[in-house]
Length: 271
Image (cartoon, rainbow, N blue to C red; front, side):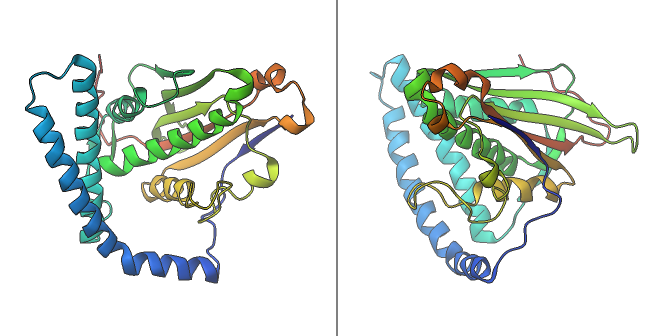
């Protein structure tokens, strides 16, 4: 078992191969976004038709609401790609709202053996960011956490995804941050992987399961608002431990974002 704390010192440099791939993405982004927007219009249209049905039970109505919310967010993101405007709009955002929005999207789709927890300290300040980018960053971290938990579910048969919010006030420069942490009870991150996870296109997933852009995008988002990202991980190599369930409770990872508080931030209380 190994314990590692890591903060990227600087944005990883892209290799020539990475630059070619980024150029390809840039060249085709507009066309892909246009096609995706048309598909989303189809999905939302059928969702509207279903919404007019009177015989939907409570659970089906809830699922339909989740589809509508997710489709609306996806439309906004595709429009951002079409117009080449990122971020779309900086606004004061209660970070609690953003976390709860992502948690609501995940709640009814994750494995029932996974517990979703939210621990919010009082008086967490608002942040001035693009709301869609913030929610996408939270979602990327959550999906990575769920993938990690899935690796250990066969042995443990349960896992926990936890969101935590707090405030950090620095005496040195008087900067104030909203602190968001996303934790999982997965196997942790191996040292050789941890050294590369913020590099664009780096992934440990199969070719059709990941692009390797999730964490690098989260880092880029955080640093674009003068924030910071770091992680801690306790790694358990299941191959070295035949009884993985005995040690899994000690493993896992936590990714932490520090986002500067809005100037003269008011606290939004969420029930």
